Length: 200
Image (cartoon, rainbow, N blue to C red; front, side, top):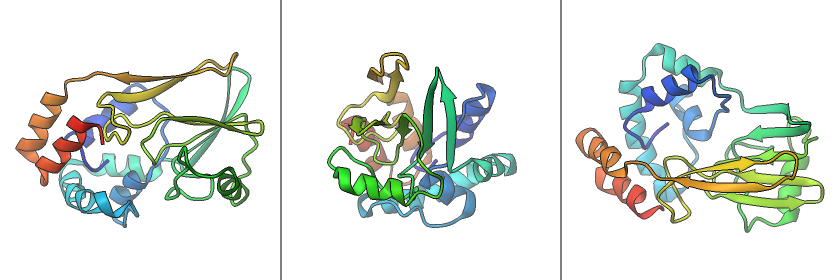
């Protein structure tokens, strides 16, 4: 949510494909009309595009966002997973490649639900990451629509649960078509399209 021209189509796709989804800070801001608590650099874009998003989404779309869970615990391929947006302690905290192990452990210790998992999967920073702290593997697949790592592709991760190998993919898509929609419909189009074209 926020930033993109087709929030309604994103929700439709998630529902039609029955894709398990967690609530991130922008979903939360749209759904409950609260602050996204995002960084200063992008905050004005989030606020302006949220107004656009509210005009596009119908009541069912808003309810969908409101019902998204903050965390999901799941067993997949004999491995345990803990999915959350930011950190286990808060959807607004970042676990970045440079975040110290000590700080990550404090975030884990402060979790509302214990992190008893083989894999902790997070987002929020929009930066692909694969790191290990003790027996816990922490994965961030990156971002499909607001890159921060300098790659313009839609970022995702493929995990082999048997070997623990993680492969990061940057899938190419028609950025020009998305940028044309942004330019036609949205505020701050020059900044928004610049992020997509630069990859940050």
